[in-house]
Figure 1: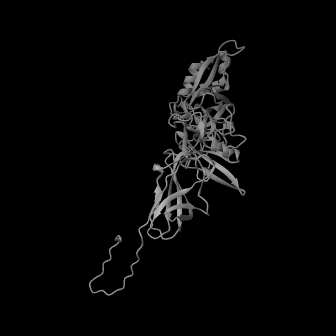
Figure 2: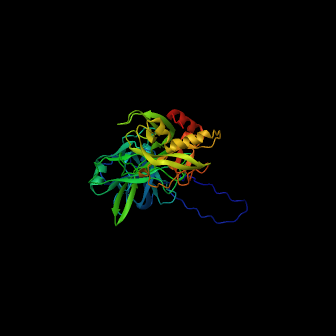
Figure 3: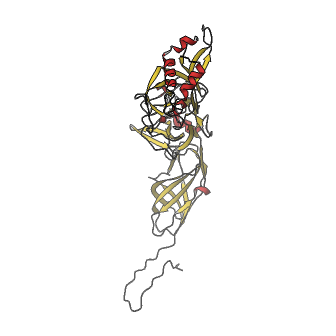
Amino acid sequence: MVETRNEISIDLGYTCHVNVRAVPVTTVTLNLIIDEIKQLKTEVAIKGTTTGFSIKEVDAVFAWIIDYDNNDIEEFTYKGQMKIASNGNFDFTVNDKPPEISVFDHRLFGKGKIGYRISPKYPHAPSAIVPSDESQFTFNNKLQVSSSVGGKSALDLGTLTFFNLEMGELANELIDNGDKVVLYLKEADNGDKESLGNDNFSANITWDKDTKSVIYQWYIGCTMSSYKKSPMFSFPEWYEEGDTCEYSYKLCVERQKNKKIIKKDVTYRDEKLFTMLRPELSYFRLACEYLERKNAPGKVPTINVIGNIDNIHEDLSVSVRVTLWKAKSPWIFEPVGDTKIAHVENGIFIVSLCEFSVDTQKRAKHSLAKWLIEVNEKNILKEEPVFFATVRFHEVHLKRPNLPLRSSLIYDVKKFRPFSESRGRISKADLYEAKACCSQEAIEGYEPVRNAIKRLDLKQ
C-alpha cells in the first residue's frame, strides 16, 4: 500500500501528462550516546538506524549542539557520509573516520550537555536529532577565574582584588600543552549617563604553563601596575558623568598556530565583573583654629582646610593639592602662598594653609591679615566670592592631568564651584574647563572674611 503524501487537482477538460515518482518512506534514528568528555580530543562513533533508503552511502550533514551551563547554545557542523548496512543500521563518518569532538575547538569549558543532529541529503528524508536537554553526552571541564571581591554590589576606588585561575584536569592539560588563558578586563560604560569612549580602561591578565598558579592583584579603578602607596587612576574619562564605573570581563583560551592566534571564548560574551563608586567630594571648608606647634610660645592661629572624599578605600594612599585664594578684583583671584599637599586618610584630608604669629600685634602685620582687615572695613554685603580654597587630585594619580576635575571627582557645583587655576577664575558653567573646585566659602560672599577676622582675633 502506498501512502498518499500530496493531492493533485486537475480541472475538468484539461489535457495533460503527469509524471508520478514513487519514493519510499524514509526514517532516521540516532543511537543515544552515554558518555562524558574525558580527553582533549575524542572520536565519537555516530550510529543509528534507517528505513527506506535505496542506496548504501548517503551524504549528510552532522551537527554537534553544545548546550553550555550558562544557557548559551552553539552548533558545529560536519559534512560526511552515512554508510548504511543491509539491515538499515548506519555509521556516520567524516573522511572515513568518526567525527571528532574537541575541548578547544568546541569550547567545552564549564559544564554542559552535547546534543547532536544528522540531516541526510536524500529526497524527503527527515533529520534525526537528540536534543541537548535529552542528551546523556556531557562535559564537566572547570575553567574559571575567581575574584576575591566577587558578588559585592559596589566597591570603593582602590579596593584590592585578587584573580585566581581555577582549572579541572582537561583545562590544566591544555595549558601544559602550550595554550594560554587570558582574562580581558574593561570598563563597560553601562550607566544611564555613560558613553563608550576611546580612553576607557582595558587590561589583560594571562596565565600559561609557567604562571598558571600565579594569583594576580588589582587595585580597582587604578592601572594594573599600581600599588597602594602610589596609585595611578585608570577610570577618569573626558565624558565621565555617572556616579559609578562598571567593569566587565571576558575569559578566553588562546592558541598559537601557524603564527596566528586562535581564540576560543570561555565566556561567550562580556560578563559583569563589579561596579566601582567614583570618588565624591562631600565636605570642603576652611577652618580658623588655634593649634599646638613645636617650640611655639602658645597656640598658633592657623587657617586650615578640612575636606572629605567618599568612596576611596582606606588602604589606598591618595593625595590632593589644596590652594588658598583671595580676590584680586571682582571675580578674578590670586593664590595666597604655595599650593599644599594633603593626604587623604579614611576619606578625610586636613592641611594648614596659613599660620600667623602668636603675638597679636605681629599677627595684624601679616600680609593676609592686612588684606582681610582691609576687605572687612569696606563692609561690603555683596554675594561675590572673595576668600576660599580649591582642591584637586595630585597629578601623580592622573594619567591625563589635562582632564577636568569632574572626570576623577564628583562634586556638587551648587556647593563647590568649578575653578580654573590657570585663569584664576571661577568657571560658572564650564565643567570641562575646571581642573579644580572651590570650598563652600566661594558661595558665601564676604562672610568667610568676617569669620576669619573674628576667629583669629585680627585687629588693626
